[in-house]
Image 1 (cartoon, rainbow, N blue to C red):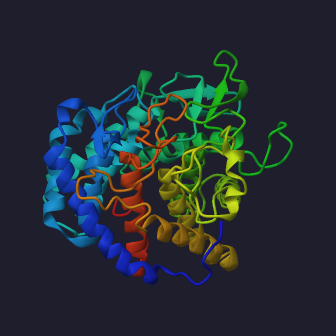
Image 2: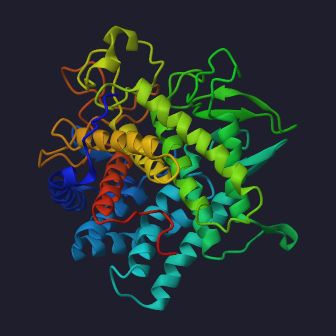
Length: 452
């Protein structure tokens, strides 16, 4: 990736203002045109949101977007849209026992509402705040219940079953951290209390050990920063078995959205660890483990992506070699061989920025590089090549990919690979990325646990 060494957050101010106008228009368009009886919107087909998949993991993104827009602009209509839909339609997500995505659905909605209320962005009653808190507490406990013990730790297992650790969950387990911060007591059989903070940290340590590679000779494909989408365990004896993937090309290549989940998940977890009492047991060692993972994954992203920061969907995609020296030129969403994934770029850019902020005092040179890489990537995403400026297109961020192996992504007429479409997670994370930089321009820093 070619990093703009002169870029700063202020230089993107005009583009950010234009983005808020675009995002507002897209919220109105989706509210007007989308039929909620279809289920949660997942990705667009010919510019119209449709639903497809195995679980409901995107509805919180839909209603979280207007809450982020309100946070940045003060648009009360956006607040009311996000609040009403959260109250009316999100309750079943709080007790959804079949998914590992609670941090996606419920922090995007109840979490954003509580943050806005507690930081004075809107006035509300104590009872309303307690309603949001209760939703976060319950959601954290439900996600924490998806627990698999292994010989040297444990993890929150994916919807595939107790043998399956997904890299995605590094970002969703923050719901446990917020539930812990709110003082929730999770009780299981015989009134045994589960420490939500300890469970989240243990999940992160296990993920760092098995899902992230460090170039230390673990196997024949051990390249520093490479990430396995799924890690498989024998649930009889707790032993690790092998890497795997659901949405990537193979267990021995790197699905770039999974890489991005790791970049952001570990970086923002580090921010949370900095808020703990320094006497927390083994805190220094835990921070070192998470920092090692964050650095490795962010470095790998910068090495593997195209020159403008946009990654192709998998680093081992079978036809990637036909693109030639693709890392030396800007990504081409309309090529004939492999799709790009802008959603991975939006997620990864926030990871780079958060790692940069974390390193500001201890490693100023590395911090500057990471921050400028994230901002350079945001500049690319704010261009007309990636923003959905057509008034009829319901998405925000173009060229997102959902599930390439299953063939779920729409290929427009005249094209050979998926392109020109949006996803609900891509739209949300693009909005959250813009809000993060918006806050940087105000001289402060937004975190997922702000205002608790």
